[in-house]
Amino acid sequence: MSAQPTAPTPDAAPTAPGSHVVDGFAGAVGNTPLIRLRRASAATGCEILGKAEFMQPGGSVKDRAALGIIEDAEARGQLIPGEPGIVVEGTAGNTGIGLTLVANARGYKSIIVVPHTQSREKLDFLRMIGADLRLVDPKPLRDPGHYVNFSRRIAEELEAKGERVIWANQFGNLANAAMHEATTGPEIWTQTGGKVDAFTCACGTGGTLTGVARALKARNPTLRIVLADPMGSGLYSWVKTGEVKAEGNSITEGIGQATAAPGNLEHGRAFIDDALQVADPEALEQIFDLQLHEGISVGGSAGINVAAAIKLARQMGPGHTIVTILCDGGARYQSKIFNPEFLREKGLPVPPWLA
Ligand code: PMP
Image 1 (spheres, protein in one colour):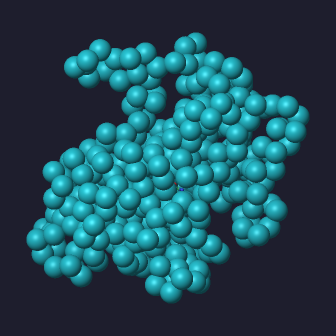
Image 2: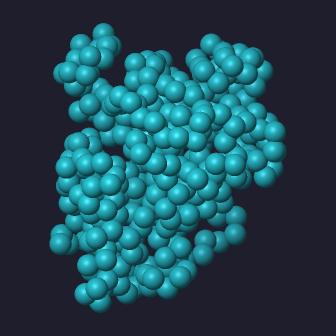
């Protein structure tokens, strides 16, 4: 296992009242800006607002789930700050980054299982921050080699050896959605002053959608919650018909499901009003437009989300406020979304300034 830094003082020191100083990594999670996307808003006559999760300390929306899961394990006594502990997870990358950074700040180790098809930038970053990275082949969920099953087995084996270990289980662990219900949703409500008509975002685990949906619907039951799904994922059909039917492929990472709705998404099912499908070229158009004309550089899932918010705005008509999530930053996908060879290989249009 690779060496990881240990924290000298894992306990958060309270900051003085009125102070704007936050304590450590955990203190810096959350409270991201809500950015008015000027071009998307002008094009639709709606207010289209993006929650800038790419500004989280670990670079993605998954910092929230990572912190929520580790804090929950500590509250249950499964991990004890200041004592050795191991966090194991299977992830598309971002959850592993968040978990490793929280673990480093608390004095735990992390073992992170990722399919090798995920972007090189995420894998390099995981190694750089000291995760014990295990790469696996992409496999169907029912296969024992699937990254989720593989990571669960590692945690079980360590537990059998008497290690203090948790399997983070972001798909089934409801501490994930609970963190969004306690932070992301209320932040959106406060930032908009309650003037929000709809929320849309894509799902990996469903933690973000479910948590935000539960928080916002508790404050305004008429607000619309719409799942955004990349073409090729089966969650669109799950919302529409109750059945997960997947066909095709997307270049996006960390979102969509081919076989089943994860526990964190099921937990929000009653709050989801509708679903929208977005194709990769539609997402890319938004990613390139945001980057070149708004100065906002985001990754694939944020592109799906913004494209879905625009579709939803056109369905709802002018004058509405629609919030979505800017999940992570473009730098995490330089070798893919911003790489002309990769785009050509996938039969996707190469924007002129990259060609
Ligand atoms: N976007 C990216 C880039 C992600 O890594 C993830 C999580 N895998 C998501 C979106 C989806 O978030 P959630 O797990 O909360 O549904």
